[in-house]
Length: 133
Image 1: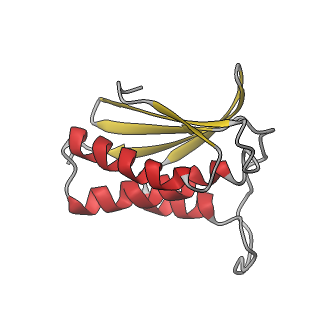
Image 2: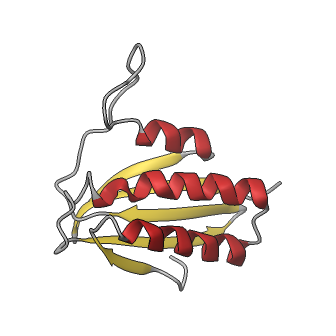
């Protein structure tokens, strides 16, 4: 992870700090306007770990970190929740109040992975951006 890794309490107010952190990562990586926008949108969706992963429990933390290498930027958003099963493709349009975040992350990035963690317990969502162009 980059040196600017942070931990935030699971409060909706923390989402503004995620945006500020994402801007700093974009600056450190020299991202252009389009890539900055993609990073910001992906981070906004991944930071929903505050609500979905941690259930807005302020005693739980959301961890943000990043690493750059081999022409890629990897951003890690980790929660302390119970985890989830990554949904498969579904027919039709999802009009429920939630459940579209990973689909959006997939569109805004060059790939992502979802990794359950044992220590500390939780789940990491890791959006990947290709910087080789």
